[in-house]
Amino acid sequence: MRWNWSLIRKVVLTLLIFLSLYLSGIIWRNPGDYNDNANEKDNTPRTSVTFNRNISQVFGPSSIVLHNAGNSQLTNHSKTISSLNKMLDEWQLSSLSDPTAVKKADYRERLAQSGETIELIFSGNIPFGLYEKFFDFLPNDIQNRTFNRIYFSVSNPTEAYFYNTDSGTFYQAEVEQDDEKDLRELAESIPEEAYSAKSYEVNGDIVYLPVKEINVPYYSYMVEQQPHSLFIERLFEDTSEVQTIRKDQLIRYFDYFSELSIDEETNILTYHRSRTSGDEMSLPDRFKDSFNELLLYENWPNDVFYTKFSSVTNEISFRRYLKDLPIFGDVKHGVTFIGTTETGLTSLQVPLIVAQTPISNEEEDKKMLSGDELMSRLQSVGYGSHEVSNITLGFTWKSNKQSARVVNFEPEWYVELHGNWLRAKKLIEDGGGSTDGL
Image 1: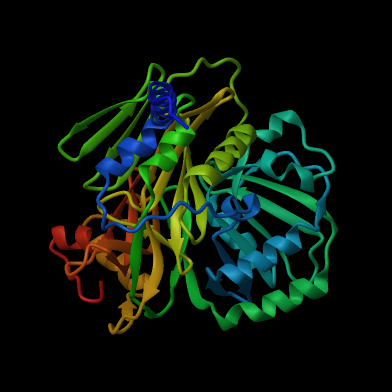
Image 2: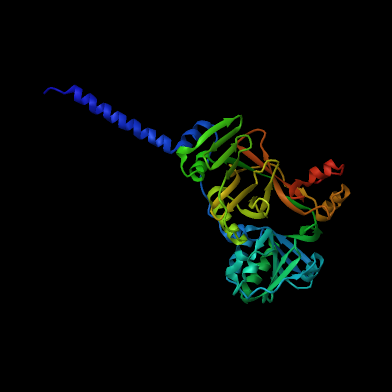
């Protein structure tokens, strides 16, 4: 049998041409994967897991305060807050009363005179429209109004009270359904993980700080980086149109409508897209849309809480939490910003590094100042209650000097001034005050 070598060569050549076209098509359709793998460091561990979150947790309370006979017990314990959220999901409220103006001092007095009460503290102002399902009727003009505190009696939870510490507006609603027994059991469990707290009025808020010094542990975690391709594939409709430019530590991906940039030194991703905007979105709709985007792009494996809405940029910020405390730092590894319109995502800023695996730590707990001592030291360097907007205990994200794959979390007091969170230690140190215990 004689082989027709000329025909065989033609067939093989044709197959190779089709194979080349097929592989070229894959590369053109998926440039993000190809370019991303070429740009990223081979020794950096990566993760692309998306975590399930509950909207009632993200926009829910970050702290609970139990008031009784002039004493206050504060807890940030996530399991306690989760139990309370599940309990409140079963409540049904009557229509909301008309708002009344209540000063912060009067609000604190009402709490003091209300017997045993539970107060829910939210990290930011929440629109009533997000809680619409709890009300028999909620007028449209109330949907965009906001609150950041709720309290109710433990022994007789027939009314719930809503308050906004920024605007001084106060509302109330009758509770038509509750389970007093479960609420009593929850209240009795709070002191187990809580500490005694005292309230302080600051410019625009009421803060609770410990009556005595408290001990908070240090933590260390192995970090992982999310791959660039995860965001390129989700943020660009047609990856074949995406172009890439690298300059020093900055990588830019862009097409005709949007741009994504990644700073490889800070591992912060920033995205912008131009979209036509029609009717103004309601606050509840904007919050819900931002939550849906959060599910896609924030892969932090622990709790995340909403903290703020900017009416200037129309962006909503969410802060990462670790061990029930917020994360801060010189680089914004602790916060995600999301902007949306009715047509979709317009802006995004998210850290690509996540603290994935806890590792042992030989350091002892850090002793944190009491509220009175902290306020006194701030006052001594010119930061009195009229200058300070908020105070919280949080963790500072610190890179480990021995390993780039390890991050350390140090507990510190943080102070909000003019919309920025700053380390109390740095403020007091710059003012010449004592930093012992900070």
